[in-house]
Each structure stands twice: as C-alpha cells, then as structure tokens.
Image 1: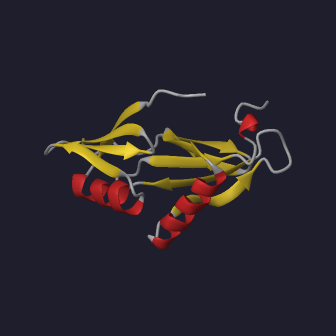
Image 2 (image 1 turned 30 degrees about the vertical axis):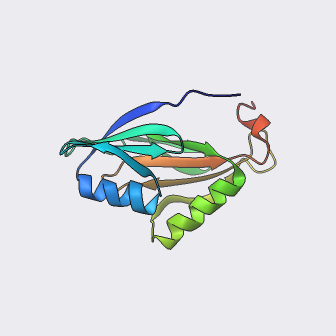
Length: 139
C-alpha cells in the first residue's frame, strides 16, 4: 500500500529548540524555513514547526494499557527495526520519555512497541511499531 505523505503544522515556543530536537535529536532533514516556521522531513511526511509561543502541549490524558497517554499527540508507525533505532537514538540524545519504550497490549490483538516523548515546546509524540503490520487496525 502506498500512502500519500501527510502534512502537519504544529506550534512551538522556540524555533532554535525545534531545529535542535527535530533536526539533530530526531534526525529529520530540514526543508524550507523562515523566521516563523521550519519544514522537516518526518520519514517522508512534511511537518512544519510554527512559532506560536504558549500554544504547544497537550490538554488531556487518557489511559491506555495502564499508561497515561497525552492528548493531543502525533507520531508515526515505523518498522520494528526503525522503531528500535529511533529509540536508541533518542536515548543517546538524553531524551526524557513520557512513556518509556515498551510493548503495549502484549499477547493481545494490536500488540505493539510504543514510546511517548515531548519536544522542547511540550508537544507530545508517539512512535509505534508492530511485529505484524496486519495488527495495525486489529480489534
């Protein structure tokens, strides 16, 4: 299945901190930018950090498999090897996780590797992977 790239624009408090986090810690190539926004290549998708101080961060928490999940959040479903490499890269960068890299729904439909973290502005991100991608929409 070939999916078109999605586009997501989100608020950040500080563009230099966003550039360091998304560009350096996450390894996202930078595209165009201005004094008010930066495009990043988010594994083939376009995310745009827009300078909007005080507008970032989550507004709620929901419980999923025993963890408090920040809402809203965004992220990607990666292959298991890319998920593992990203978790190691983030650990090496000293990233503080909201939910440490773990396996969720172990032994159940939809079993997945997941991790949650925040960017420097407080935006929540989730990265997940499935040993069996057929479980992505399992119920």
